[in-house]
Length: 387
Image (cartoon, rainbow, N blue to C red):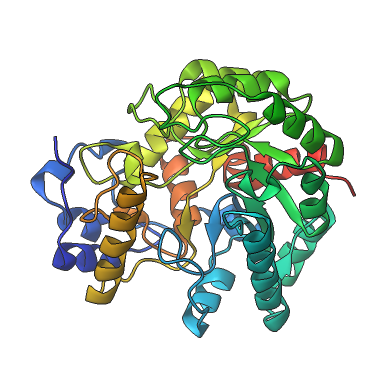
């Protein structure tokens, strides 16, 4: 089945209709195939989830600039304003290149952006930094890698990058590297000998092990090899919708048994074959809670804190970006130039509040919601990061 595309007019209609209190207008803008049952979160006008502004809110894969887009576009005033007004306390910002040198350059670029905007951004290296970001109303930025290729062939580079502020590293991207196999590698090999050394060193220095994008065997091996809790920062549940980028219950349960956390992403992979909506995100969250327990589920949107504007220019750049990923062989199934990387009725800088409100409408208690939207990540930081 080919994914349903969203026309520019339909998308812009949805974006214009978004409010924190509900999504009635956005539902009216959907095509018939996208308008499946939303009875679990009735789109009614209502006050937003009251505790949101006081909560620690963490989206553990996001960026203040456009994300899943030509990388690192200049930050403008609107992007910065959206980041600060999002209510998000901190994000895990991907800053790796393809090797050691390019990764150092990208880290330097983001440190420079943080320095240029000290009133808006705060680098987060410790739990104390996280709480300072919350207290001062700034977006905390945790530097992270989505691949171990920057380590090249040296385990010593793990600590080098930690000293530069990299606090979380994903073992593989979609393809094979020196550490293990990504989720699109047919061989589905596990951790290599070097991979075991990398995990051991990450445990020793306090760098979070991330198993997003990893193949099934590498995911299982990574959980077993790590002496510390691991993360799956941005993924979904295969039991809800099968996709190579999502995880089986066995993997999720093993991760949770070791004390780790899974972040549910806001990507088309949640619903292969159609555009995802907020109800689909909540379905994945609720399934993860059933499998892992409420202490081990969170959010890693894989998005920007700035909503997609749906302009002709954005569509053009999106098509070029996805086509390039497909050509390089790093695109996952269902990446389509005609499908935007977003959840249509969560396309808002306040999307974490919309998620919290949706969970509240489904009857989840406030203390559980606080864990899902950030508390569980904060707990894991405290267990893994050195003061």
